[in-house]
Length: 388
Image 1 (cartoon, rainbow, N blue to C red):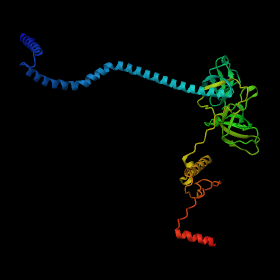
Image 2 (cartoon, rainbow, N blue to C red; image 1 turned 90 degrees about the horizontal axis):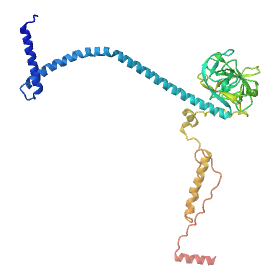
Image 3 (cartoon, rainbow, N blue to C red; image 1 turned 120 degrees about the vertical axis):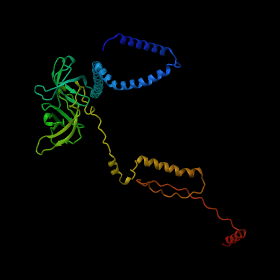
Image 4 (cartoon, one colour; image 1 turned 135 degrees about the vertical axis):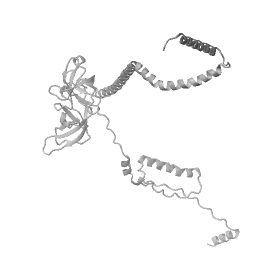
């Protein structure tokens, strides 16, 4: 295209006209002569502008997203880190709460048995020379820990210290096959020896309890506690060990073997305590937890009361009902003496009640009045009496 003087003149005129129209339109009111022209131009070019924006908006957003991508990625990374930190803090709070509960239970058990303990936390679980099931705790000789001290948890016996370092110690667990502890049956003096089963026990985590006397009675459900060692080392007396779940009887053997479920949960052991001072007296069975009451199912209740019959009431309830009945019967006679009263009939026994042995005396009936007689009848009666 050739740049001529005429073309430049036309462009200049058009630009000047456009500026004049813009200025006039901006300053003029809606009632001017240019208002209809402006409305027509707005409607025409507005539709074109809307269609153009609809087409170009996704493209504009795409390029804007690309330009903002680095900042968005940094924001997402920061949010992920913050989320991970909050989750870690929540887990730590939950873990601390669980540890506080375990520590409270352990201090309660130590208080019942009058054991002086030093709390510790398990930092690692690994095998030790000569033992296959042991843990490392975060206290040592600097905290008063010595070799052959009893280790317990809030539930019962855990094991004993086999090595004590300056700041850490090694504890062999009750489930280790190489460990042996003297034990006693609850409520008696039947003695035995507890041994761990290790890997041979599988996932049951049971321990073996061998009775020294084969004639001693052993029943499923009975609980065992530590008997105590000479000088209370390595085991102090009275620490709960477990509940017998199975009894094996072999004819001809000098001992009887039972398998018990430990009170301590060795799969998630965390907070423990080392007994640094034994009690002066054997606590016997005072440290054992209360025996849980068996839950009675609805089916068992239905068996006890076939046909939905009411269960027999206690003796105290029946006696109270008997006294209430006596007071109810005696009140009318006291309120209206001399009134006609019929002899009391014997009360039939209630359902599920035994007949009462005492005899109740009915008030004597009031004699009925004789009917009035006629005057002639009274005279005849007197003559008959004199003649007699």
